[in-house]
Length: 67
Image (cartoon, rainbow, N blue to C red; front, side, top):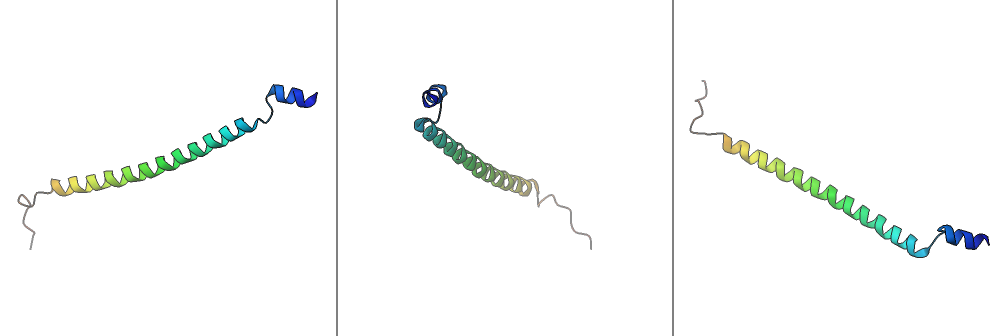
């Protein structure tokens, strides 16, 4: 009787456990991909910032160095 009640209430169904594990793995994969993409985005933003800084310097307008 206890086994029947446990099964009725929602005991350990192997299909549900397998699906839960699959979903947990998918979440971990997506979190890893998010971290990778954020790092790549940060690197690209830093490179773009560096390039725009270099472009903002106009060597023709620069003042001569003091001697």
